[in-house]
Image: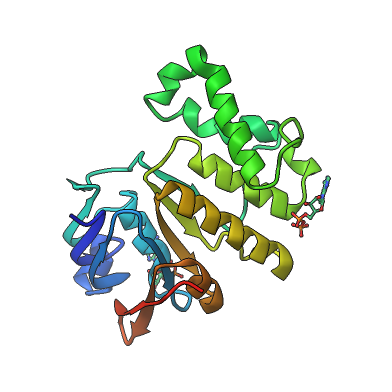
Amino acid sequence: APFVEFSDVWLAYNDELLAQNQFAVEAINLKVRQGEFIAIVGPSGCGKSTFMKLTTGLKMPSMGRIRVDGQPVTGPLKISGMAFQAPSLLPWRTTLDNVLLPLEIVEPHRSLLKKNRKQYEERARGLLATVGLAGYEKKFPWELSGGMQQRASICRALIHEPKMLLLDEPFGALDAFTREELWCTLRDLHAAQKFNVILVTHDLRESVFLADTVYVMSKSPGRFIVQREIDLPRP
Ligand code: ADP
Ligand code: ADP
C-alpha cells in the first residue's frame, strides 16, 4: 500500500470560496511509496503549502480522500516532523533542549521522557553530531549561525522518529555553500533511516538532487493541479 495517497482531493479554504468554486488545490491524485523522498516544485500560490497542510491533517479536504500510513487522515498527524524556512528555535532553550522539545508534546515520548531522559538526550546528541553540531549542545540559538540553526531545526523535526518529514523551503535562507552541505546531510539521513520526505521548494536543482520523484505543481487559470511526475535517477 502507498504511504501517502490522495484520491481526487479538492480544498476551498472556506464556504464562501467553495460557493464560488475557488479552490486552493484541485483534483490532486498522488501515491507516495513507503520511504520515498518526493519534492514539489511550483510557483508561489500554486498550492504547495495547502498540500502540506492536507498531508499533515491540519486541513481537511472539501472533497476527496487522503490516507497516510494506511489510515484516513482525520486530524493533525503526530507521525510527522516539520521544518520551515525560518529555523524558529526557542531563544531561551539550548540547542539540545530545542531538539528535545517535540518529545515534551508527542506521546508516547511525553510519558517516557522523565524516565528515559538520558536515552533521549543520547539520540539528540547523535542527531546533532550527524549534522555537524557536536559540541554545540549547550549553546543557545543566538550563538549559532543561520545554517547551524537550520541544522538543529531538522534534528528537532526528526527527534521523535517520525515516519514522515515535511520540509517547506528549509534551505531557502541559506548561502549556496551551506545549502549544498545540508543537502548532502539530508540525503545521508534519508538513506540511513528511510523515513518519507516531502520537500517543497522553488529550486529545481535542489529537487532533482534530493528527491526520488519530483512533482511539478502548476497553476492553470483558476485551478491548481499536480501536473506531471518525473522519475529521476539520483546523481
Ligand atoms: P504556495 O504554498 O504554493 O505558495 P498556497 O498553498 O499558500 O500556495 O496557496 C494556494 C492558494 O490558496 C492561493 O491562491 C492562496 O491565495 C490561497 N490560500 C492560501 N491560504 C489561504 C487561506 N488561509 N485562506 C484563503 N485562501 C488561501
Ligand atoms: P552560515 O549559515 O552563516 O552560512 P554555516 O552554518 O555554514 O554558516 O557555518 C559555517 C561554519 O562556521 C560552521 O560549521 C562553524 O564551524 C562556523 N561557525 C559559524 N557560526 C558560528 C558560531 N556562532 N560559533 C562557532 N562557530 C561558528
